[in-house]
Length: 462
Image 1 (tube, rainbow, N blue to C red):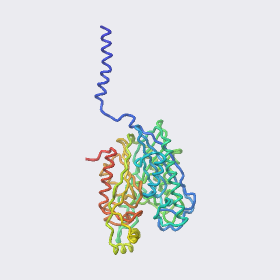
Image 2 (cartoon, one colour):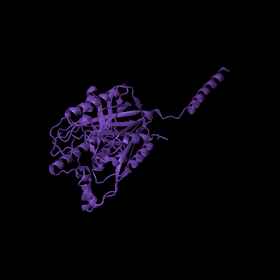
Image 3 (cartoon, helix red, strand yellow):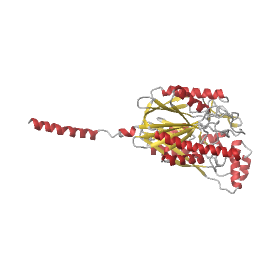
Image 4 (tube, rainbow, N blue to C red):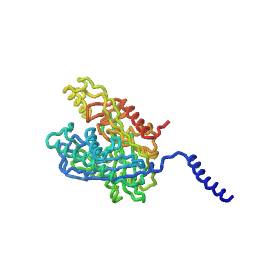
């Protein structure tokens, strides 16, 4: 009797365990949510005087270094082995030619796919022009052109090395994030009797949010902080010839000074229609960086939301429509208008004079990284105006969302339909190729963002 009862009890235990397992809710396997993070950094300050990017008024190479420039990498790997690498740098941007050149070297060195690479510049206007051998469109000749080509070639190799080093540095990590707010962002679309000009518009819309991503080791030691700001990196002006990362560089420097041994990384947001305030002096650049860095440090020490896997990295190109080419007479008249319109019109006339056909669309890369159910990173191309932020928030829902701009291809400005109707500098559109966007471009942008977000696993609003 005793032995039969004991045998029945032994049989009942595994049956009960199987029953509990069958009744348990379906959830992601624990290892899917685990993240590893790797870090790498390199100084990328040019070793020789070089022509600077950002202001057409400059007419000579750089003169000294105000603050060193850096490129930094952060690699992610989830529990299933999905990888992605974020690369940031104190440069003005990566046009399509440069981005392709850089990514090709990264892919050859790391075996990553293109969708797993995200390039985001700080958009400093006190950094070098980035060229690559055989590229055109910089308006430089002779030694000045060779100089920017040498720099671009070296930079691409450094990026490949950084991506490989960050992947080699992968370690278990605790990742979290939060959002702060900054006062340094000012809408620059000033409405006057003569139209919209670059100036100050205190009542104009800006995105003042400061997203902050914190990376700790499992034992709680802080390793890295990534932060964003939706603002042009233009405290310093065309009269400044010393190399620096402007406010974004000073903000990273401040964070790293407050947390020795930590890697700080800056991602620019949708700051196409915003300038820092105040601006115009080195002191203002340092002040803006200190103010932003202080807020980043404050957010990083608060209770943050966890960021877990699985990780999904998606990248696709969207064909952005371009306006039909105006008649020659109209183009010639446009060359007499504002410089930003005249530049594009002259490019069109030059192409027509050479017998070249002008494009009817521009293929631009859009990226979405999805971290489990915790965070969606949307990376838009071009100098995206601030006004896209509420549009993307409406399309995807505002929660657990980080929106970056200027990413993967800085081809020119990406305006909304409203900005196009109002006019102003941000309507210059393409500057790497000739062309103007029509109002319909807004719908194409939002449709691609929604498609990619859904593909990456973010539920869309009803």
